[in-house]
Length: 334
Image 1 (spheres, rainbow, N blue to C red):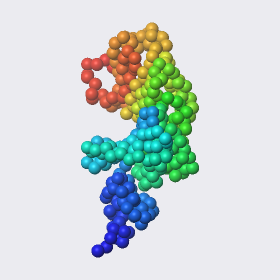
Image 2: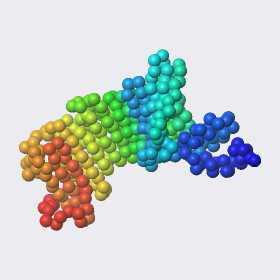
Image 3: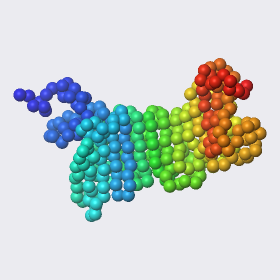
Image 4: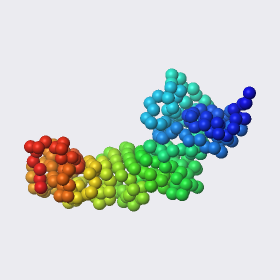
């Protein structure tokens, strides 16, 4: 009988292409021959989401595909937790369906153990990641530097991502991480600033990044930002907050929505204060910040769509909508 390691290359590749990430890693540990073949062949991995988070002394890693909600072995969702123990030891917990096996690694720091596993994942043949999320509040950046510092994402596409979620307290975390991902594939950038409620942040350095300029969707939560409104106009979907919202900026966005060739733009502009509430009322007649109102505008070069501006107590919402969904008795501003 032919053993697995004696099989020809073609059927071996076929087998590896049909099994999941966990099974491939188990095969790697079977013998040197299988490990060497897997490391050389680098089969496609069934991973398109990677989430890294944690608390003090704990790093959590989640990898899965297609929003698979079932933990292994019922599904392909892998959840592993690395916890610091006394004496530079590490406890690893693998959260599986109905059981949580643990393993203790002696004389090795938990962040180093996680860093090694993260490096193994990067050595795999990963697809374009649909989402990559990292929480910098408790997660050290050293593992990024260790595995990505000598690799240029522009040349080698180390991390090719569509949606990047960054959770942090510092703008420097974002600036230090963005160079490690490919700007050309990034479609959506989500930034959540934690424990900074009520503060304003100058993001002038972030808006200069190529990733900012090429992304199509932007969500910023947790702080008010300081940046010119022109820095946001290329986004098709936007959620952002300003400390003070100026009338000139609202008029700028109105003109942008009226004349843009796009028909799928949507902005939610949150604010703490309006620069001049009376000036807003004079410009838009009835809308105030005390109740919900909406104005509908004709697009001069578009017979199929309207622009709507929704006025809410603490945010304005800009949309481009099809005329067929707007009631006929609604007043439209020419």
